[in-house]
Image (cartoon, rainbow, N blue to C red; front, side):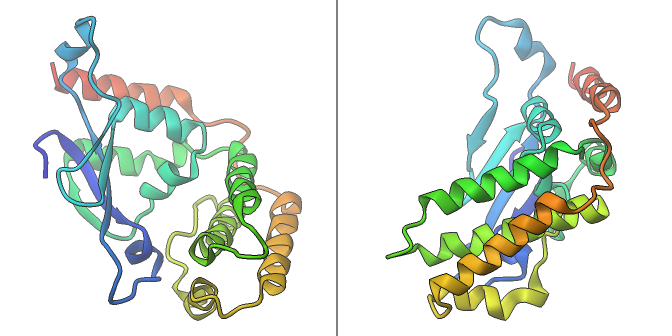
Length: 212
């Protein structure tokens, strides 16, 4: 693990409750660049791969911006059930996760799922992609109903893995997608109209001060 990481979690199938013996371990993290590095013309990287296989991390400011925009991948990191590393700053970030959620999630989760759907060929679907499309709609629906995404979908494990294996007819997958999409579009949301940018900015300023 890198010294500047403030949070590292496991995502992918091992967080979703969909792992098999062949599953990789997908890690997602948040790092804090030294504050003085932002004083230069060349700014720190906003994200990076590694150093471990299947590991990807965002610089804390970029992470916050994406989370405020209700990016599904980033939001779900804040609710991962598998936390491998967390510093005091990372714990403050996790504790702040409710400040990031907003009604934007309605369109962002639906939009990401729809983009996946449009890339699928009904005549020869990529079944793993189809499975994750359904999972994403489940997560978004849970978010607008309960205020947090549904990361662990283990109770739907068998049906979702059957899709991944190509054992579910496309028509059935598409009907499930359409039903979830309609439900997501019409479900009354418990989410606030806008995220709490003030609290997020206060957190970010605190991290920058700590890294002077």
